[in-house]
Image (cartoon, rainbow, N blue to C red):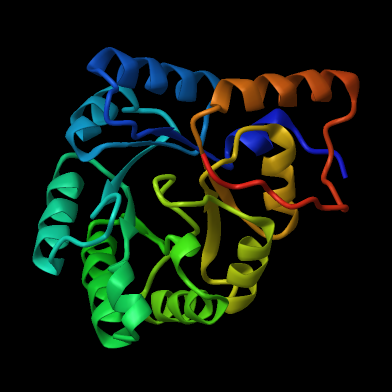
Length: 243
């Protein structure tokens, strides 16, 4: 089935999370996301005021990360970080779970933390994407984390921060899509650098992809659309993951 470049753009959270980026880099990232009308720009918490300024009046959402990248902040700090981001105009929060607690089986801790942030976000009309950091979890733990996320009110489950030992895989996206109901969407992130990978993620039910290679992906989408070859894929190949 044929799709449009705009369909692809609205899957992309343009990532500007690298620690070395300057304010100029963040502004250029916003300009790029506005050019293609991406789903959001996902930036460091310190950059939320820049995003709120530059994306005002557009359909590109202001997104930031909470407890990033390791998830080990105390819950109260994550909640405070989320509150500040929301106060500054953020409407999408990508939060990292406490990975060690998840591995240890402390489901109550993980669920409570997600619920506190989800409840706060929803009270402000924002959404929450829960980052599992799948590279450190078994399939059983991934499934459990997805179910905990849904029970706690998450809007999305997301594979990776991009700073773990491995990024997104097709198998993880399939597993996560199967572990949650239609009320929860799935986001792939980490090592997604080309259009074919985005299309593969889309084919197994991912609604968003976190990417920094937005220009490359969109240029390829526009090229294929002009040629009449931009379409949904059926046969899938494994993502390489990693960085």
